Length: 140
Image (spheres, rainbow, N blue to C red):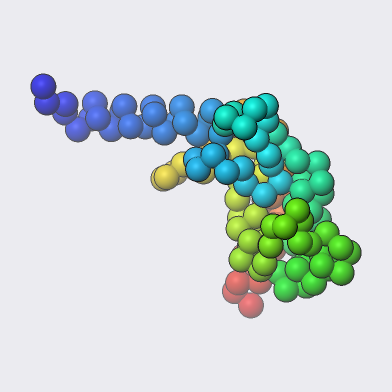
């Protein structure tokens, strides 16, 4: 049986949306700021309160216009890094600041982020403000 491309595309889109809204990380390793909920076999994520404070601090500093290098130094000086043996560098902070996961959405392979079932750590407004600040810094 041969499936036409429109049907295949519709099925793939439905599967992507279903996977994205299931509130589970793709690799079953939760992103920084989250942890697996329930048993070790669970794929649902919940907020890790201590790591979430680090994520919030990154977003607040970025919204205030501080550089990634400054944020990293600040977090180390405050004793927040390393966190439970996890090393977070400039690239890690950059990845956090650009990930819509932290305001409660997930990024699809293509297209706009879609809402997910996991709890947000920051507001969408803060995320958008940080994106504006990062864009300003890129084009200075």
